[in-house]
Image 1 (cartoon, one colour):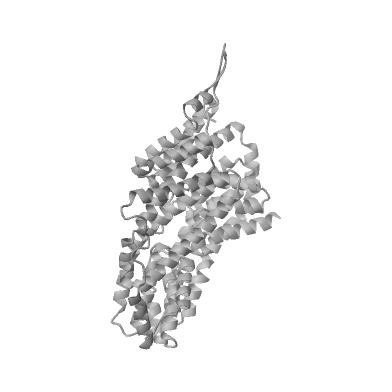
Image 2 (cartoon, helix red, strand yellow):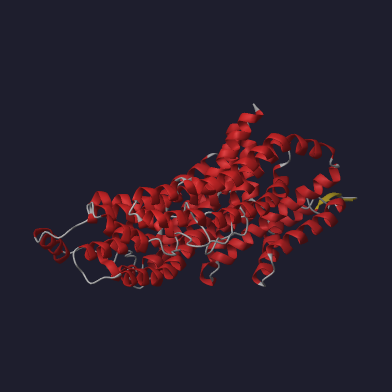
Length: 540
């Protein structure tokens, strides 16, 4: 039975880390510990325990952002393998961090091996491109790219669960209770680090009242994450309405008037080549799903970009192998951006390929220069909105629900993130195709990015306030016996402000994050504090 469980956990680790479609990967990879809590909870027969471990481990990663292909930790190994090992060892959920975080750091070796060795398949794709063999290029992107990740993710995970879980369980059984108490206290302090990193991403002075409202609703009224998230969404909309002079009109500049419809009809009447809606949808879906599956240090997303252009080239050039070969070669160049908002670039490129097939004076340099010029700005927009706002807001809601034992948390994360990624990606791809080189200007002029950022920021700050009050479970158990009775310090603190100690720990941690202190240094400091205070009984 353990061998089967080890195999499923290993496959989940590999799939989440590298093989699943990118629109789904946003949730199952960046939310790996949380989703792993659901998966392992079901697999190992204890859903409540799995959700508790997953939500605790997730707190260390909630504010981490991966920029330009660099990762602070490997979320898949920290999540799927770390949560599984914690559960199999029967450790306290708060101790899961001490198991998962080292695995996540070791997992960077797997990530770097994948990023380095996947360049082999890009060079194989170059040879297929020379022959005009589009199927060979696709095979390199979809299938060959998974050979090295399977070796570095699935196999080690399988062996760790199969042979390491019993050893870890035996180790946890002989650890003295004093050490377990220290690890537990450190595990309860570390969520303050994740929330402080999240605050550094969301912080804007004008949004601080939303943080205070979220904290007060959770601390005084004991409202859960979901009702506070709903209130936060409404508050975000109201914030936009009353702070925007132009009002909320995110699609301004994106209307398709009679002139554009007339132009399309004229082109069709003139017998010019037009890409079908089916081909455009196929190209978009390939990009949205497999644009980053063969991620590598040499070309980054270049092979994935070329893959999404295959349907476009095949429809425009038919049996002209020479023209298809030329197209494959020009799109195998270095490329790197953010997948959702960056979908505007393959949309623009599809429009340029269409113009080129109809005789327009467009050469390889023009296409590649445009892609190069746009990939940085669109990555900046995408990372700031997708990773720094949408991801953390949805994770915050999901963690709050999962920490209360609700499987709705990770399920909601997967569903809502998929809707967001697919919706934004489809909109941006079609905007790129319709408006060509002017698409980015129209996108920014429409105010979509700014308004989305403001609204999500308000909602995120309110949820953040709620999490500070609910997921940093530290109290002061000190009591004093007097002639008049027993005085409990925690009761006195609660009369001053409920959840005062979690708030203080969060603010102190945020102060050091803002000063530039490294997260690893703060984690070490938290372990030192736990070693000092746990035996004294000052914090629990």
